Amino acid sequence: MKNNPNLSGNTPGNSYFLPIASLIFSVAMFLLVGRAGANNAVLRSIFSCQAQGLGGAIPTIDVWYQQGTNLSFIPAGEVIKKVWLNDPSQVTIDFDGPVCMQFGQDSNSSAGDCKSSAANVIQLRRIQKLNIPGLPPTSNTLLTVVTEGQGRNKLYTFRVIYKTDNPEYHTLAVFADPSGQEGACARVPQ
Image 1 (cartoon, rainbow, N blue to C red):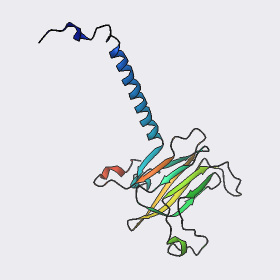
Image 2 (image 1 turned 90 degrees about the horizontal axis):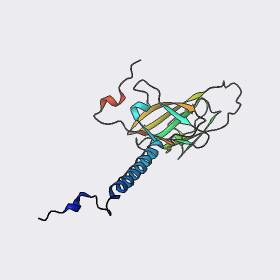
Image 3 (image 1 turned 120 degrees about the horizontal axis):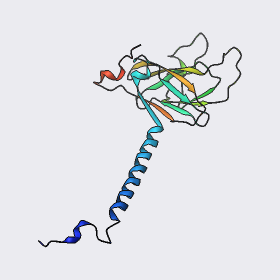
Image 4 (image 1 turned 120 degrees about the vertical axis):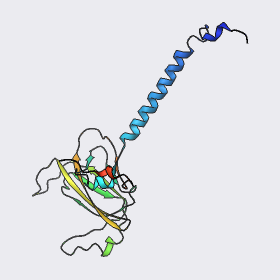
């Protein structure tokens, strides 16, 4: 083997190669990490048992003026059967499919359109406050959702927080509980 003194990388043609390569690598990593952070910011996720409050905390969902916030039960494989919104004066609500409509004293979840409920996503959107007589002013409200999946009904409650700043995410996805991970919904100490 011949000893080559030019392998040190200090030749005039290679003197800027390493700093330029480092700069390109750094910019690429910055863009990838920034993109991953942005993608994570548009989706929040929660396990079903956490969303049901079994860990001792009421989950929250934020709503903004600029865009709607989706509450998706698609990952959990559940169908929305019934929804209550305690303060409808600041939030509109829509669904991706038919939902049971019940009114009055004769409500029956096994009658009429309740059998054909097929929505998996609730879309909430903040609106300017409507003046509804008898409804006190509030800084948040409670959303209650009854779903059905795998032959069982589940009850979820979410504190809906009214926001005025820029949206932080657009979807809260409810996932099925992890199998074999009992700690996912451990009770929060009071």
